[in-house]
Amino acid sequence: MKIGLGYDVHPFTADRPLFLGGVRIPYEKGLAGHSDADVLVHAICDALLGAAGMGDIGEHFPDDDPRYKDAFSIDLLREAWRRIRRYHPTVINIDATVFAEAPKLGPYKQAMLNSLAEALTVSTDRINIKATTSEGLGFIGEGLGIAAMCVVLID
Ligand code: MG
Image (cartoon, rainbow, N blue to C red; front, side, top):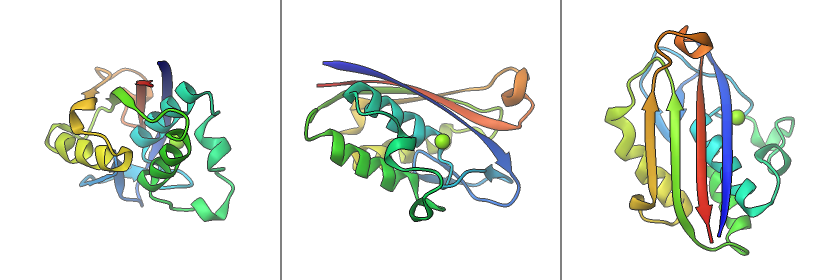
């Protein structure tokens, strides 16, 4: 068994849709980035690659590569898992936290679980998503961006 840790941050921008966990979430702002800037999927991807000892998301999908401009990160996760599962075929569990002052994510958690489980070909009971605010503190509390953290166990 191998454990992995992932962490990511993206700043809000006014002119993009918000994607988290592969789900389009209605909100007045989206996240800036080369791909769709799905910070939760990026953290999960890095955790899986870390557990596998296979580097990080930037090495697999460089953010200066035009192929990944505006890419759906859930597709990058699907491809990363295709590369990882040859050596480590089983996701034991994924536990992730999204740090965001807004929007409230509770109504979208099941859709995110479904999306992530489909990309990783696991059942949703292997994945847990938590959401928390930063109580008004720091860049998250000021509503400047969203962060996500994730640990995974693979076998
Ligand atoms: Mg990222």
